[in-house]
Image (cartoon, rainbow over all chains, first blue to last red; front, top):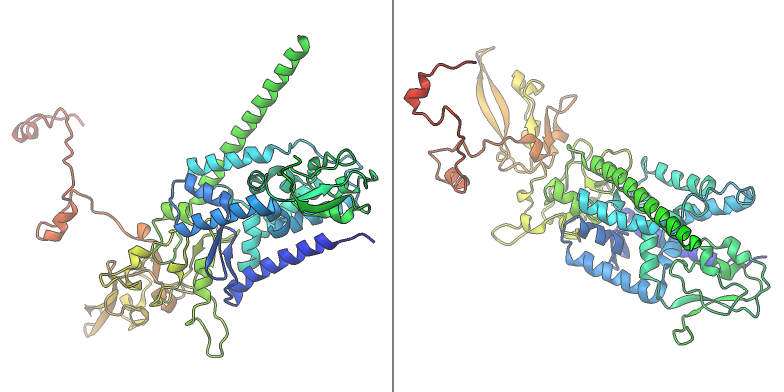
Length: 267
Length: 274
């Protein structure tokens, strides 16, 4: 029986956060109001999406202090603590793409060589920069007009409408198109959090002594390029693209992977 | 040597490809974004910036819509929630996705005294200062969400049938909509009571549109930009000091043509080939 501790913790966190957002609209709760664009925590603390904020600023509008402060709080949190944890612990699209990836593994699609590798993982950084440029040119936050993340979140809070088709499209793309196509190759928000969280403290650490080289971690990891040290050396996963999802920790039967605090001394 | 040359070629080719594909993506993305911006007939919450700026500023957080639906006054007698005025545009609404808007025939704006939606806005897309009156209070009557327009051919009051539904539904009664008495020449002994909208008072809340009794409302709210004209600087009310203020910064536009160089008496007598 495989351990699912972090998987369950993540799902609980994702559902809880979405439920609080939902309740803010449906029942008037003041725990977590708004959407990722800008939220209010406990009715006072502003939280804002840093990438959205940069897009709006690029479009030429000077945002209110609430949003700027909120973006600062979020940036500092992920920069210091969480890394790219937003992607795997908060973002609702993660549930869609994880499901697609799980079915993909069950259907053994990658063994049958139907993984179209026309996309590179660095594409997302191009898209991230492009989003800011397009925002400046057109005068509207460009990623926000098609972001499946906020479409799904608003869908859960206010109702989906035809927006559900975007979610289905992402699901199909990840299932039958590119493995981890959206989160691992395209999403500019993930790219932004990769950069923001590249020096954060919470890290998965590999213990080379315990590793039996079964490669289960690399199979399950949505960003398995970050696990280059497996069975090679006992170091932390320091790449900013690691989403701190903990699936590698879950699937490892040899206690060779565990969360720890990054040690800057050892390098 | 040959190898490093190959590497350089490969590097150049992939860089060029990346830049090219990025440019392609940028063009498609810009085109799409520019198209979805264009949704002219949309009514925004009170205090919203002009549409172009509003679309820049709105961070699509939904705090205004949540404040609207959860306001204290929005409860049925049994304490259950009613639908809010503000909706968040979703796919298929054909309005910029994630932005707040309202449809008067579904739920109009009830013009709450405390305007819960506006202070909730964190980004400044709903501009609170524009709703502050001389007494430094929030004043919903300053809102300018749209302008009610009467289609006189379908308004039964213009047929001579007595109806003042819009007049009575209006939260700024007898100011935003007044009833104008006019003799009904057809019968010779009845009066028309014609609803006339005054754009300086009307806030565009849409209660009149909701109240209108005809199959399709004969009075409806349009965004101010679509519902108004503009006389321009050439026309000034010479009898109105305030109106002259309006054009005090107007500059003279001089058009030089062959004819304008002559005196009026000359060019009026000139032969012209049309």
